Length: 285
Image 1 (cartoon, rainbow, N blue to C red):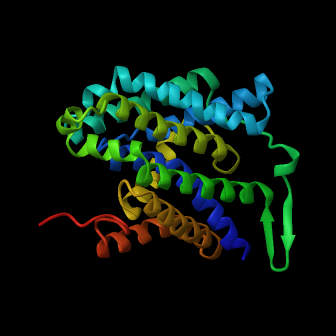
Image 2 (tube, rainbow, N blue to C red; image 1 turned 180 degrees about the vertical axis):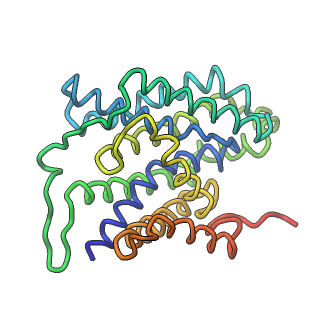
């Protein structure tokens, strides 16, 4: 039960970071491999706010997410916007360039060492139940992720903004014709995706660690979640994250010799039977 609980917590953290990529890739049709760099920005901002400014942890989380979103808006307006109609190869090359620039900048500013983060007292320690030891921080992570998943699903599927976003992606010219400000919708969507990445990066410092290699180290995990869950599907990202998180933790615990291989094997098997992802739509023939 403890391994299962830790796997769920790991999956929820994976969901928090990767769902922003699902939003930009699936809903905006932009291949943003620099998504992990925005998560790293959120992690460093959270560490700075905690260790140097003295901001409480619960206040540092939304601040880190908001400041990361601000960085995302600046880059979207100056760089990303120029590539919305470019080929996916151009988008990949551009975002990979941003990744290596962010790694160099982080190493110059903070050094190559892992960044320390001290959790508040109420998030440390464990909650013991019969047959189950729950880490307080992991429980907090699970509950927060569920709230965010529900809110995102409502935002994308049940609000005017979600409808405007889908219209802007499907047919930008028609969307402009009915009065939708497509540029503003894309900017807000990109800000949402980067804010989620920043929040996930801030929450992940304690579990994943934080160093300049973060964007390269974990981008494959984020892409696996999007591929397995189905691009642009919030529920799919959540289910895929939980499956991969549980199997990854269980594999490393029970078969440590091949534990790191388990998540890739699961991805291959799932995509053989569901190439469009668990909740993705089949391509038209």
